[in-house]
Structure formats: C-alpha cells, structure tokens
Image (cartoon, rainbow over the protein chains, first blue to last red):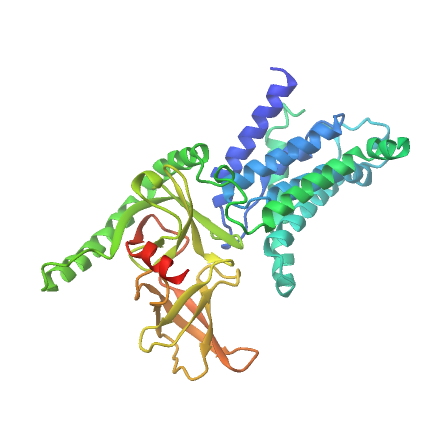
Length: 167
Length: 261
C-alpha cells in the first residue's frame, strides 16, 4: 500500500470512529474526545504545507457534516494544521530544525508537550467558537481543559497501541 | 506589482489558512437556512445511511425498555379512546407521523437530532417533534429520507411555553449548560408560580398544538430587570435516551402563515 492510500484510509477510519463511537461517549454528560486530530498530529513532518492545510480543512468539514456543527471543526483543525510547524519547533527545538525527528522514537516529555499544545489549541478554538459567549467563559475553559485531557490521554493510548506500524 | 506577487507567494500558507478559516466562520455564523445547502448536514444520504446502520445495531440493546414505554403509551391512548364519546370529527387538524431517532447529541451548545423520515413521507420544515413524555424539537432540514431536528437543547431555539394552571406564557430556551434543564424567561412578574408546576407549549405557536408537555419548574427567580420571572424547567424527557418520536403536522399551517404575512 502506498503512502497516499494509507493516509486516506487512516483519515476515513478516524472520521468514522469519531462520529460513530467517540461523539457518543458524553462522559459526565458533556465531554467528548476528538481523536480525529491524531491524523493532524502524526501527519508526516516532511510535507507539502498547502496540501496539509487543505486536507485538514476537509477532514474538519467532514466531521462537521456528520455531527451537525457546520464550520466548527473545520475552523479548529485548519488552525492547528497551520500552527503545527511552530508547535513542532517549540516542543522539539533543534531536532525539528535539523529535521531528524521521527514520531516513533521521541521521548515522552516532548511528545506530551507537542500533543497537549495541539489539542488544547484545537479545543480552545472549537469551544470558543461553539459557545461564543463571554458570560460562559468559565464553562468554556472547563470544557476546554477537561476535553483536552480526555483527548490527550486517548491520543497517547492510540499511539502506543499502534506503535509497530507507526509512520 | 512584482512586490505584491512576491508577498502572496511568500505568505501563501498564511493566506490559505486565513481564507479557509474565514470560510468556516461564514459557515458557522450565517443564519440563513438557504445559505448552506442540504449536503452540509447530517440528512444527506451518505451520513443518513451510516447512522441508520449503526442505529440498527445499537437499537437492539435497548429493546426491552423501548417496548415497555411504548406499551405504557398504548395503554394511555386506549384509555383516551374509550373515554372519547364523540365519534366523528370533521377534518383532522393535526396529522401525526412516527419515526426513529438515528442520531442524537446533547453535549454541544447547538444540538440536533436526525430522524429517519423525510420528504418522501410528506415531512417538511418547521414541524413539531415530540416523544411520549414530551417535547423534543422542531424539524429544520429535510432531505428525501431523513430530517434534522433542532433539539430543545439548542441555544438558537426559542419556543412559546406557558404554565398549565394559568395562561401566563413566556419564552423557552436553553443556556447550554445542563442537558436536563431548560429556561423559561420573560414570564410576567404577576404570575403565581410554584416549584413543581407543569409547563406546556402555548397556543401561540403554529408548530405545536397547545398542551404538549415540556417539564416542571425546579426553581425560579426575578430576572435582572426585576419585571419578569425566569424559571429553571427540568424536562420530562430524558434527552440522552430517545428512540421513538412523533412528528406533528399542522394541516392549517399554510393558511395560518398566509394570514400573518
């Protein structure tokens, strides 16, 4: 299987899993993890940025269509897709600049910073646009923090589960 | 000119990001229902079919409770029929269709449900949706086989509601915080309201018949202007667990709308 078909299959699988399983978890009544951002997190580092931003937008839009939240996920995932190089630089420093990082052999601390930054930004954009009300600021922050925690833990779990065939 | 082109080439990533981001913002904040086509929501045939399949599997898990509640409802309806003396009714005002929820959400700010009934069964936009316990929402997008319902748990939905014991009415909406309570605002100060009072739909709406159950009052207070009461209503429906719903069509809707134009 070549790289492109594999990427498309991963994306489709994540979208289906997100909409059928992870949108219905509703932990404590209001928390859902957004695991589809794994695609953006683990997308190959050497890439065509234009294409990457565009494909992230499409994935966000597909999630939106399935969960009737038109535009929200598209906006959030396009934001993290655009910001990813900067976040890579913050979390991996020199290793990123010299282009020697591989996702399968990076240490825990850097990985944690990287995944946390991406998912917190994603959730912050998502929930601030969704709730869009300053009087509910505390509720939004609570939702961002709790959902990010949920997403981050699941992202880690997945990255260890599928470690053998990681890109 | 050259510099302008250079600028665009240098910042092409940022420009692409900005345009896609603003496009999403337009999608989010455009309120016109004709602005975004029906393909961009869960009623299109692909998403509808996927939800229908998963629902087909998961519905078996809850079959027992579902049967029980339908049986209870049947008993209730039989009782009504036997006690109803008049035999002929000239013309039915409200037509009722039944359907199943294939997708439901309650953790978002603007929640929607998808039901497996559509155009082909003469469903159209702006019809009331209820369950045996009370109100669910209003249909807003309809495709051939599926329709999307704005849930009462949607901050954009405002409904006309009143107290069962008196005729004071207010506006029912949701603040997005707790999925088991909704808010009734703009209720006049003179209203005699108690905790536990039943709230029903008011007769001012063309969509719902008067008297569809909504919930009961769990707490109330005067609002910021000191002129109106705002009350917390705990819903009779458990919005996290809905399967069988009924869609109500008002046969006089076209006439009523024409009258109000």
